[in-house]
Image 1: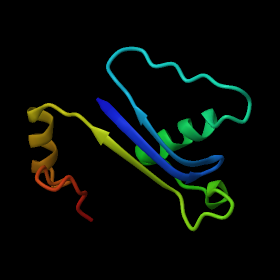
Image 2: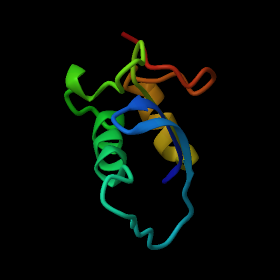
Image 3: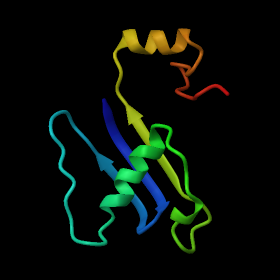
Image 4: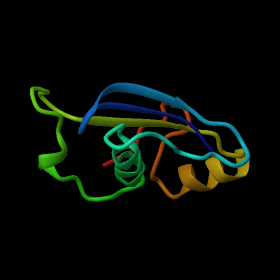
Length: 93
C-alpha cells in the first residue's frame, strides 16, 4: 500500500507531502491547484516516463518519493528477485 508521496518541483507544486491511508482517497481542488501534477507524480513513482517540461519553473529538478507498506512475503519475493534491498530500501541498478 502506498502510505506517503512527497513531490518537489513538479509543475505548480513546489513541495508537498501526501499522507495516504487505506480505503478510498479522492483528489479534489480548484482549477490549477495541482491535481494533474499529483497524478503525474504517481505515474512517475511507478515507472512512468519523465517530461522535463514538467519541472517547476525556477527549480533545478523535480523529484517524487514514495513510501510503500508491503507484507513480509512480498518484501522477501522482491529481494529474492534482486530488485530492492529490504534493509536499505534502495533499488539495485
